[in-house]
Length: 219
Image (cartoon, rainbow, N blue to C red):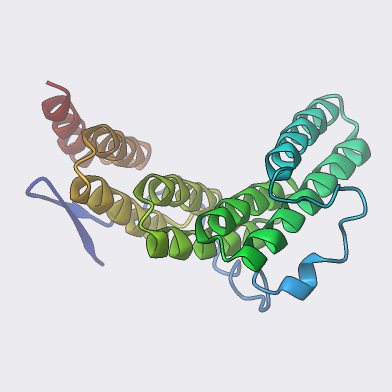
């Protein structure tokens, strides 16, 4: 087992009794958004973007996702699925464009958008793969804010999988990033999330350690 250093304390990786383990989620090969050829076949429902219309396409996606969520709440699963698929097609078109332009930050943002679209469709393996690719691009571009956001997205997927070890690994990266760039707000937020993680695992001593660090940062 590993540890996470946090403000002089050691965060011990413990086994959380409430978390379910799911080890087969990375077994399937060929997942993700890395192949441009795989992105061009399902875009009939989306306008082809150009540099001045990419923002409009993202607005279309948000509207489609909102409509899909309402349909899902109403129990209209087929209509919700159609909206989510259309949103995914829009983002794939934007991704193709950003890659053609060599826009690294735009590519990373599109990969995150695609990952979230896959999450709406319940395809968490694809979601995670897109986030991991976006994380690498954000680091390449030196975009600390987007890197922190993507780390949170990745942690959310691993939370869904019930993978404690990976959650703590990415919490460590998020904590290290916030300290490296001097973002006290993100540091406090990450420490708080770690504290709540341990609280959920019935490890009150570890939870208390991290909540005390949050209190110290906020003073």
